[in-house]
Length: 248
Image 1: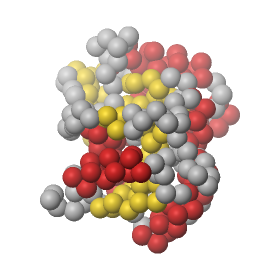
Image 2 (image 1 turned 120 degrees about the horizontal axis):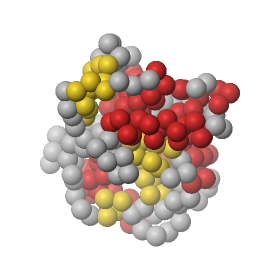
Image 3 (image 1 turned 180 degrees about the horizontal axis):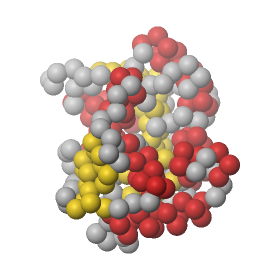
Image 4 (image 1 turned 90 degrees about the vertical axis):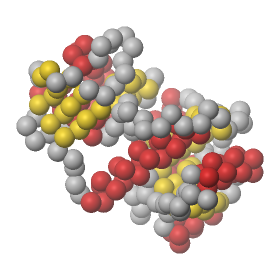
């Protein structure tokens, strides 16, 4: 049995899904806590203080988005939504209510484990109050101290807005940021609906740092929701798909 890692609270009412995730996560050394309802999940989160929450949306007593909203009133624990709902509105609501990430069922075990590692790294960085001075990913280097960007050791000259946009996405590498979140951070609260600004600058930025802007490897579009900086994933993981077709 691998050495025990952090504890993960799974809030999921489907027994088969709980069994699958239990096997995968315990097999990779995580300690499992489980809840079948939203209320039970909130109680477990308060009493057991897990390092991360995996949250289904289709719970029998309340919508998972409501669970995320109530959890965020008193906790900053990372929350990854796992759901068969793939609609843009569901993703945006969950992320706006405090979820850190969103996975649509079925998903690969390797992808889930990678998202968990990313969320926990972000949580540890937030708690320490420390930000790494240099970001590195697959030939891309961002020096936050000198405000310089390099691709394969060649300096890339960005406008102030382009740099701010890239820094925001890279600083949250692996996490989905909604259009509204990005616009608020880069342009200010009065611009949260001006998605055309974001599209224009994202196109410019891709042409500067992507080998093929039409098929980006760094700046990934989450259709109708926002963008994600896709950092190098440490492990490709298992090919097994987890989750079913039930709307949850």
